[in-house]
Image (cartoon, rainbow, N blue to C red; front, side):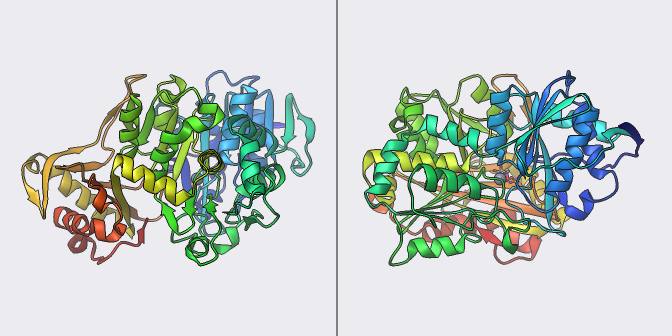
Length: 542
Ligand code: G1P
Ligand code: ZN
């Protein structure tokens, strides 16, 4: 039975870099979830009779919100719902389902790489009909709606059985509980040379994939173990858990430490990889060599033609502004355009839709292509495997060969987490005020050539996004970027992105920390990080 329930607006439902993210207790407030979902639905024009995809990364509160979403979608006139079995869908798999089924959009329940549990993080994101995160125009409309909402619509009925695939109907709405893995695995098989990868695996190539107790476990088992023949046990931590086993499902050198140690050890396999809570990020480590995400993007772009889907070449390469310029050098060599967009996958959507870019990436371990409209962890792993199978070389040989050919963009990101918001804003505000006076000055050994507050004009729809991060560019291609995170749930996180370009082949083998030490000092000199925050070192270095 459809009911209209009166409600009062919350004033904090502003979607950030990637949907609305809050602590679970915030989402558990009466009608908090309902208000936000109704605000999303109210912002989707022409939703009557349309298809909607629903699924999430399996974290604590996922199932409850999936049930609420189903009951509300039914009451809001959607014609068909495709829901991942168990309420599960990885973010890239949801993007694929939206595109494949011709849906008007999808609700993806995830807080990505943030921890899960009763006191941890939850999130709701709306993806549009192209399969990508809703553009700002829509997220602004959702936020506006959330501030004036007075009622939501819900079908009062028993919970739906999410555990069995099959068809059911609720009121006028057809509901399908779908296998979350099947369509995605089929898509991957259509993009890559599975025979070549299988032959490499049969020939003794050893790999491990750490699913971090998050959503990719079932995907990875099906693809790496069942379809590509890797032995059982290749997938580590393959059971999705509501609290990710108490860890952060963030595939970086801090949270995937065990994998890193394994890959640096004496009996390391040839290839190690991991993905995050919702399956859109990737970590790539070769035997004895960590591949920085910015380098990974460049290597993937330079070698993509070795995989069947990209044999015809790339149309363009896009990277988020803080991502290193290594990919730009590849684009230049391939004589294709490169794009520099604000942080967040939503800015790649238009470029992909317009076929102006084929491969996109971010320094935060996100890489993807035009096969969906999200970054895609397993896709990145498979493209790496395809390249290794085609080149018959190790990860180290491929990466070092790339540096020798293009020069190396040493890169690191320093995060200062949990700062007081006012302090973080003062730091960035102070830099912003001094931007025009910086060019022509020196900071340590570095001569500033340009400094700005990054703004992006979308070449497809002309929309302008401002205040996307402070860029300080130095002579010779080095730079520092300062930005505040848009995904955190407590206080503010300052991100400092450090990049040094080294063209001299004799100096491309340094340790990243050594290569960047002068830039680290320059960042502190520019922004007075220690003095303003009282921190003498970052909380996380990636
Ligand atoms: C972070 C990353 C960004 C990524 C986003 C969602 O956003 O920096 O590249 O797109 O998570 O995964 P931030 O917290 O910096 O706003
Ligand atoms: Zn994610």
